[in-house]
Image (tube, rainbow, N blue to C red):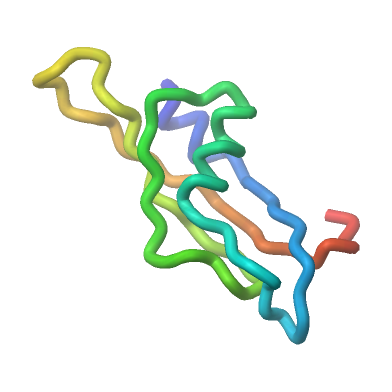
Amino acid sequence: EFALKMKEEHLKFKVKHSDGKAYGSIDEKDVKDALEKLGYSHLNVTLASSLKTLGNYEAKITFLPAQIGEKGIESRVKISLLPEDSVA
């Protein structure tokens, strides 16, 4: 159920930038923190690399098993890096 709901989420990070390159970056911890604020917990976030340019991305989310021996459930979440002053 959480995995299906997760696919509908779209995280939007507004960042300061110069010519499309962010000052700093968004990493797995930032994504995890944003998801936890939305009520998700017990998960791991995997990004191909830290997000450093404006655009759209996707992260792999693994919900950790409640009991040892169970397989974690995987999902994906959409991520956008937007200019700090954007309206979206």
